[in-house]
Amino acid sequence: MATPHNVADRLSSTRVSPRRPGRPGAIAVAAGVAFTLAAFAAGFVRTAPTRATTTVRPSHRGLYRDGSFTGWGRSPHGRILATVVIRRGRIASAEITTCRMRYPCSMIAALPPQVVARQGPEVDIVSGATQSGEAFSSAVSQALAQAVRDGRQP
Amino acid sequence: MTLRRYLRTPKGLLLVVLLTLTAVSARVEGVRFVAPGVLGAVGAAVLLDSLIVRGRRGRWGFPDGAVLTGLLVGGILSSFEPWYVAAAAAAVGIAAKHLVRVGRANVFNPAALGLVVVFHLFDTAQNWWGAMPAIVPSAAWPLLLASGLLVAHRVNRLPLLLAFTGTFFALCTVAAFLVDPADLAEVFVAPDLLAIVYFACFMLTDPPTSPGRGRPQLLAGALVALVSVVVFLRMAAADYLLAGVLAGNVFEALRCRMQGRAVAVPLVPPSGHQARVFDAD
Image (tube, rainbow over all chains, first blue to last red; front, side, top):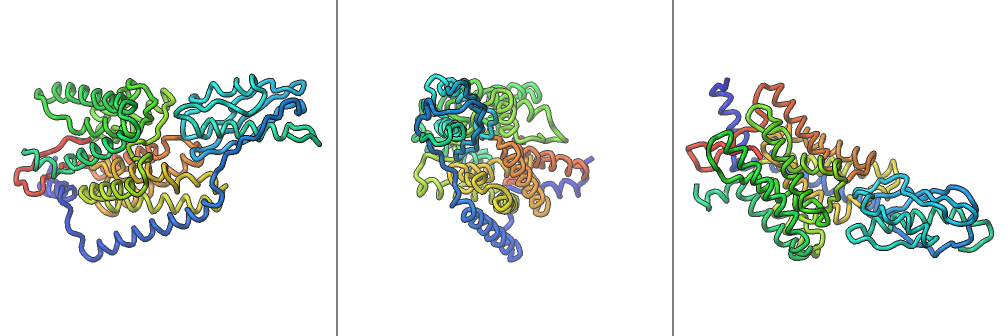
C-alpha cells in the first residue's frame, strides 16, 4: 500500500528536472569524469601499440606438409580460429573452428570453401563483414605458414 | 500537454536526440539501407504497444516509449539485417515490457532485451550505426557527447553513467595487463568507443529500469561494467554491453523488490502540479 511517505519518496527520486548539484555533487561528478578519463587513457596507451592487424600472405600452393594446422586471425571486432587440413600437399578442408568475433561468423560462411577452391588464403570481400573476412584470411594464412615444408619459401 | 512541454520531458528530449542522431547517421550510411530496419522496428513496436495499451486501458495513446525502443533497435542492428529481424527485436522488447514487470514498471530495457534475443535466435549483426561511426570524428564526438550528457543529466543518471564508464575502462585497462592487449584494443577506439558512449548515455540511463539514487547507481553502473567486460573477454559476443545492462536491470528489480516498491517510479513534469505518470519504457 502506498503511504504518503512512499509516494513522496518515489516522486522525489525521479523528478524530471534534476536538482542542482551542490558542491559535494559537483566534486563527485568531477572525480568520476577524472577517473573515467584516467582509466581510458591508461587502457588506450596500453593497448595502442599492439592494436590488431590483419595481413594476407601470398599463396602457399604446393608447399605444404600433410596434417591439421590452426591459426588465429584478428580484427578490430574479435578473432577467429581457423583449422586447415592438408592432404597430399594440398588444402583438403578449411573451417572456422572458433568464432570469437562480435559479429556472427555466419556472415562469412561462404569463405572456407573458397580457401579449398583457390588453394590459398585469398578470399572474397564480404559486404558488411569485411573485417571478419580479413580475420579469417589472416587465420588461414597463419595456419598455412605452419604447414609450409621446412626450407621452402612461401 | 503541449508539444513544447512534452519536448522538455525526458522522453521528449530523448526522442528529439535519437531522431537527430539517426537522421545524421542515416545520411552517411545510406537512407535506403537503414530505412527498412528503422521503419520495421519502429512500426512493429508502435503497433504492438498501441494494441496492448488499448487492450489494457481502453484508450489509444501516443506510444512514445515504443518509438524510442524502435529507434534504438534500428540504430544498433546492422543495416544488412532484413527489416523483419529489426521488427522481431522490437516486438520482443515491447512484449517483454508488458509481460515482465515488477510492480508498475517493466524489468528489462525493451531494446536491449529484444536485441539480445534476436542475436541468439538469428545470429544477427550489430554495428551500432546510430552512434555515427561513419561520421567524421570531429562532428560525431561533440554531437554524441553533448546530447548524451544532456539526456543523462536530465534523467538524473550521471552517477550511473560515470560509474559504468569509469569501471568499464578501468577493468579493461587492468585486463590489458593480464591478457593479450590486442584482445581489448577495440574498446578504446572507434567504432566500439562510440557504441559504448551511445549505450551508456541512451540505454543504460533508461529511467524505469535503472536506479534513481546515487549509491544504487554507483553499484548498478559497476555491475553492468563488470558483466560487460566478463562477457566481452569470455565470449567476445556482440551483445556484451546489452548483456551487462540486462544484468543491471535484474539487479534493480531485485533491489526494489527487496525494498518493497516498484522498479520504476513516476516521472513528474518539472513545473506541473498535476503529476502525470509516464509509461515505463
